[in-house]
Length: 425
Ligand code: ATP
Ligand code: MG
Image 1 (cartoon, rainbow, N blue to C red):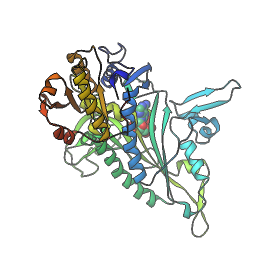
Image 2: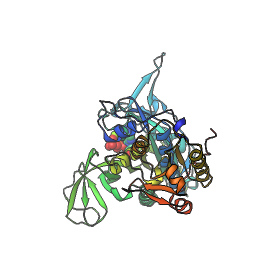
Image 3: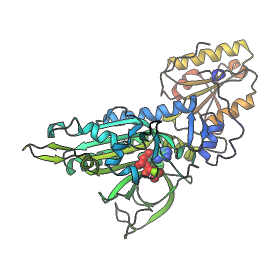
Image 4: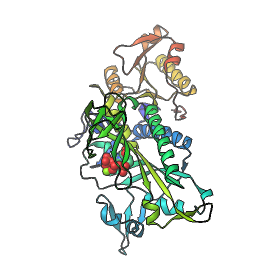
């Protein structure tokens, strides 16, 4: 992509009312725009990050046997009355049309997915099943001060599994713990993200959250110093020991929940009166599990964890581009020609490149913008580099640049393409 074609620009200041670091940096760098508290536009750069997060999650959900679908945001009131949540869910947005008919704006999709998938399950042969979607959720969040960590409208991956008995559910649930670990490892926040025991509601002893350690987190967890497991402070345990290794040395940390997994058991299938017939033809209740990840929250958590005083520092796997090519002599035909050729060659090699081809922007400003935007690798082409027949290369995490030849550059750059063609202009 040509930076001259991006309609967004970096800003020196974030809006005064924006207190969260993730939102301040993402707004200043041109990834998101704030429409209202907890409501954000994903601008072209931000959308690229979301797509990369989404693609990693999709890949892992497919490997876990999930089948993707897309359910609506408008939910008839009757469905929410069936489960009782029309009255008990305090963050539910309820809207009425001009005839007075009320609907809920979906904050989660058990009320839709349970009768939907259930209508196709009649016998034990139809189980297990797993479906998921990426979809906008709406929640009346009271504390919408955490930027994209807590939106009133936000995109969630929600995954639902259906099983013949508790044993099959429990086995699948264990498998999903490993799937989730892989998701966060691949995204690049695995080192900071911990499996955390949380309250399980009335049906299970525990549910599990994946908590990423950051001072911006809204939760407090106790992290076991022996194993990579934590416990949410909200959980009322008599026993303050590690639920995994039973160790008693726990460290208190601030963290944000980036995902969670939950054994719903028969709560929703019972509410909708769903059952299947076992081998003897006897009706049995359908067991369910649900598994969520907030995409914007993951993106915001990565900003909170890795940003430095100059701006955002993206993990390679979710960076909007792998290389930021800066042309520091954009008034010189020769340099334009060389930089353009490199831009095309990198694109041909499946490297996503943001090419800063802007004229009338100083080198200092280009460097500053590049640091703020946070693309993992910066490559400079100028009269000087052209003279030496080399490129100046620097990782966003490094302090100083070095001169490299073409082959070294191609070897250093990450191939993680959304499949862009170079812009024609
Ligand atoms: P929290 O305790 O932070 O409010 P939750 O328990 O309400 O989270 P779930 O209903 O389990 O969250 O949603 C699944 C996932 O969706 C969460 O793990 C989180 O990643 C994400 N999520 C939840 N609420 C929001 C929100 N308001 N904005 C962005 N992401 C969210
Ligand atoms: Mg919540």
